[in-house]
Length: 405
Image 1 (spheres, rainbow, N blue to C red):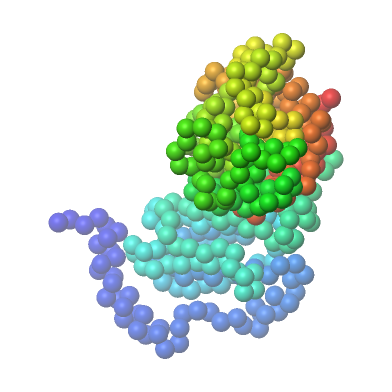
Image 2 (image 1 turned 180 degrees about the vertical axis):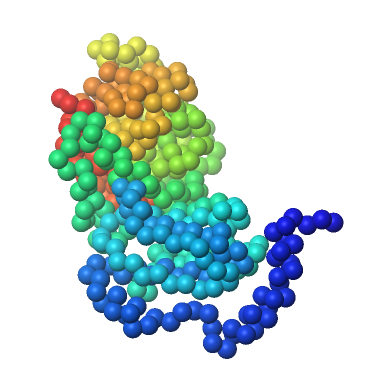
């Protein structure tokens, strides 16, 4: 059998590697923190972050970089020796960052050709770690205050307006931490809990929650996850308030972006389908909390089937759509033709994004249902989940500064 060159080189060098490992065992390969290292730590007035790297048997293939939330590269590393340990001390101010590791051969640093590892720490706090990946892997981390509304989060957007402001916000929020779809269950279990109406710890379902009295339907977090359903009240699931068919289906990172995923009754969610949000003139279906499916009212300037949530959630959902228009502004212009419903709402541009009827409605919903504590708390929960925020919850004034009056 003829082996690929890399496997042949690896096997032929294995004996030599073992002998070198034995020779190094007594003293260890990790380079100690010398006096200069300690002085550098003392000189940093912000956050001392230490990257530790243990290379595999092909260290030259490995490189890394750290970028800030404006996508500017602040630190990089490459040109490493085989099977060695390295430490890099970095001084970073408060903010959001991305650590990216790359392997030029596409086999990571563990565990095919050695047991390479890396870790990033703030003092003793682990920010990122790993070794198994293919071509590249990204880790997003935050330094400073717990909330992203802390020092400097929106600093690069100051003084801007119109679509220039929208682009600045896009650059701030675009590199969020991608999560698995199963992890969204954990998000809604903590983010979509009723602490505001009945305050009973049940699931706060946007399509069945009675905001003015006792709920006729109550869901216990995790216990009542869907599951099969035949009627409203059977179970709750994860609603893509911006329908996933609009962006092409199970496509990352949109499919698991927590800002537009909510707990919702499974049956009502299915009734909503991928219909546009709108204002109903003649209802063909109504849920227990008053959410309606039906034909659009004549003064909406749109004719077709729409789904209308109750007034208390209209502003929340409008700000979700402004978030999607901003977070995915370089993608969303291509989604218009994916379905008839996306074609009805999206106008095929990266700037205005929405058809005029939808934009005017969302602005009206945004103003009539202002940001409340429930929405602020959810924004913080999603930030902890995926390390980006909805700017239109933190700064509702951004909506009119971008899309006008």
